[in-house]
Image (cartoon, rainbow, N blue to C red):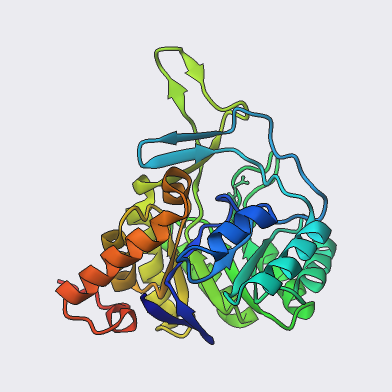
Length: 305
Ligand code: SIN
């Protein structure tokens, strides 16, 4: 078993589920708890229960996936109940993912979810909410939401970040995260505004038309974004690398970029919770092959030309 230090947490196992993958009920969260995942992340919860967008809304395509789920979830009160129960059944840290649709909701969610949560993961990056922009791309909104959440919690906060395709925008987010006191960054969420067209059927395959692309295609965006966080925060903010991790070698590359632990969604969908143990074993073999005594020793060690 590979160990990692993630902020104050000593993890037995270095993977978690990327929020949204088989994690919206107690049963599914318990399956993750009973696997070799070192920590657990919930489906993003909102103020009201949501059925999500109409389907079809999810496809696995090889090692990639496209989804337009739209945050289906049982609502924050039920999620608070689920997480309290989960915490009686596992010692693993639980990141509770949340998304308020205004400041009042964000504050209320933070207050109610905090007692059971180890960490509040603030999802500022869902690309599938019809008529709503991804908050993280708006610096003023991002700062206001994070300040409101900090006012209403005594727990650590993580931000689930969208992919930044522009370094200046990523830097602006980093300045806000530093000012507000973000404790963890989970990078990256899916790439939004994507579309799956079946040319044979001449058809847009998602009912909501656009969705977020996840899986292997994201790896290089993920590595690039993680490296920028690592260089900005100089290791002071732990990073959970997410986006296209299919193997332990992918996770090793994330570690070299600067990630301290890893999340996987598409691979979890494809393979089930056994993926955590397989990828961890592969990662351990990579660390040995490259003469690193621990995962921590490899973090940020990607050499430059
Ligand atoms: C969704 O429910 O739309 C996917 C989760 C996310 O992108 O944050």
